[in-house]
Length: 265
Image 1 (cartoon, rainbow, N blue to C red):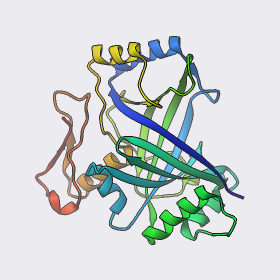
Image 2: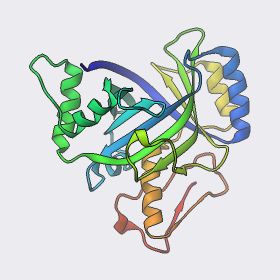
Image 3: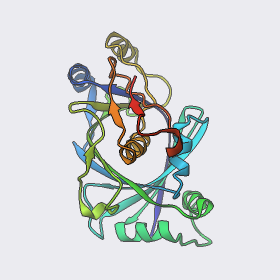
Image 4: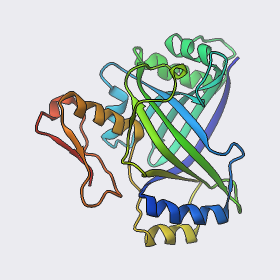
């Protein structure tokens, strides 16, 4: 049996160097409560069409975008609870629909959605997306170690730190384990601030002091661009301001050649 959950919130991402992470983490430890699960390894398979329609649309910064992923907490076995998630972003607001079932059933469901008359609305929405794109396939594996915190004054405000971000575009089965290539330079962390409306004033002031600004950094988008760069032996380089790490937008392999450098700003 599948069960569904819905989320709606604003999400802002920041890329932290080691020094910035240490400063922010110290303040978060004072003002937030840690998630009851502690540090968790999150493992994902991202689905897309053979032409990578979803990810190329996403990195073009449209007003609306969506993605489909299969997620587990830790490396799963056949019976581990897995989450089929549809994540949509419209006009800066993030909406997430997800349903859960045993891992092997989740894989089968994405390949061939089973529908019933009494399906919940969330199940219908997820099935509609899968059927709409028709030929979705596993395309990328992404895992990372996440620390999650909830604001002491209201649990609606959440901060997460993702470290050791690893990706691969082969062995696309979460049961095979967490391995692949690092997505970011050593020591860098992706922080996500998840709020229903606005962030606390003290946090906004601290981010400004550290010269940290929201970035459109996408894990799966960066994995896609790195894959393109590898295919033509291009380099992925950092410039003098690595904090923003905004990768140039490449929608097709035809836009780059062997002389292209995939830069961060």
